[in-house]
Image (cartoon, rainbow, N blue to C red; front, side, top):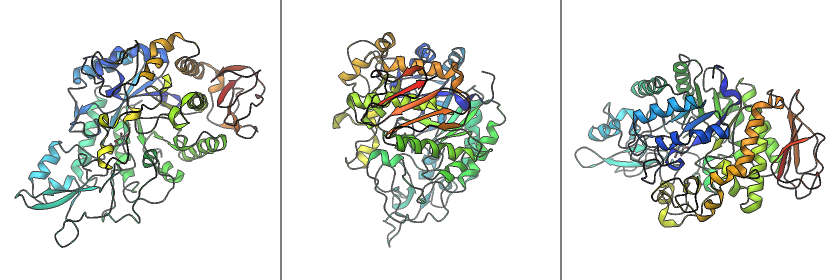
Length: 528
Ligand code: NOJ
């Protein structure tokens, strides 16, 4: 654990705390549940955990609406449970990183409550973005911005005397008012939060909406109403088209402040969720005095097509090369459809997801795995009446939201619950999850879990995984092959409909069965 740049090649495992493991039997995952599963995580071979928000919250966005960033919500445990988890994780050789949410607070945060009780123009309101409305009676929102979750990004409040008053900005749910990052108290408070958790021995942070926070002072209208095609498209802007809601230049000052705090704590990491479409804009976030690392979502956007995958990899490498940072690869998280489903579902979807896992784990840089990805879980098909994501209501039931990829993890047994909880899980677990329980996959050498375990083990021990540069080989149409420069380990992927010959070498791992020594469709192999 001594290397200060440990994160450069680390495998990070994202725990959606609510859905990982429930120790106290209320149907919701918690910190003690994670602690009880550390042995599994060690066996899987990951280096680092990333915990989604577990802070005091009314849970309008399942914890991304934070009422107190320096305490634990009782549904997840308490500070003592957090300390136990960090200490035990370190004993298991696992680092712990946590999610911080500096773009917004909960409406229940004491600052926002004070703002509602205070008059327009008061210092209490200045910590958020309060504005008078447009129109003669001020009854239209101050600009045309839309919330990422659906509907206007503004909600009107009453003045303390009960009359219709100002509007406040929320880029996400109305329960998540955006903080004003020109306000010195907002900066000081984040600094306090960083130190609070660093002093409790966390190994780093994931910054939520790291491309948010700063807003243009005049809050100009967007040029057009943005109505992206599908749910995933919301999270993955396709181009570098300017959007005044995000990626304002002043945000880099915030990242420099965060980094300056972390630099007092050697070996701690700050990584950020950076959804910007343009590589040169992305690279600004990972300059030497800002984030150590940004999640690059190009691979998420790429369809299962060798040319698209190669282009996503090359663009991601290019985006960090100039800044001297290293890439962060992700195929899955709690905001998007799971890879098995995204790549077509069923057996083909699973085969493709397994193949892409081998591609991802062959790449230089940090790799993020989202809990359940190692089990090959597909999205869950949930009935309307159980949906909890605020997107469902805010979009007027036109977007089903992200619950499909947040269903609890099936650990063992044959009845729902599946070892996640002794009571009713907070989202129903579909019967097909019963066929994918971790305990059985651990015993089965052909399972997705066994494949991911073996791949991580090879990534850590085989000399073919050293070096930051990639060399590409010529490959049949619909295929790709690369290796780290100066090594002999080749990763080959077949996204075509044909069986193709493999490059020379001995197959040390394949994502599925080979056909007469050849690489079938929807399959990847590592050759040494
Ligand atoms: C990004 C998080 O990943 C997502 O889950 C959350 O809803 C938004 N930020 C708002 O905090």
